[in-house]
Image (cartoon, rainbow, N blue to C red; front, side):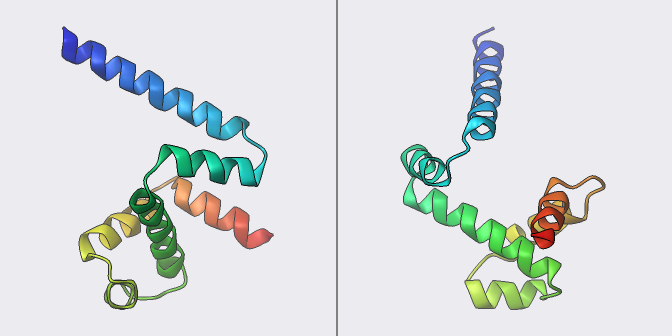
Length: 100
């Protein structure tokens, strides 16, 4: 029973964070909030994931990305799979920011 409760609490908390991220319209405040919520290593990991998705989208090979940014091929492969999924959120965001 406790495991299910914990799972529900975590899912609710995640959904609450999604709502918070959606509601924040101030770039500096969002940065400050993320730096409070995540460790410097986690922030760096998020940045690396975004870098690898953009690099894959630009046609850079996974091996080149791994070498250039010192990333594991497993992480890059995961990013590539997410980018190529039908209705990929990565793809939608990339396309949105290409328009700007």
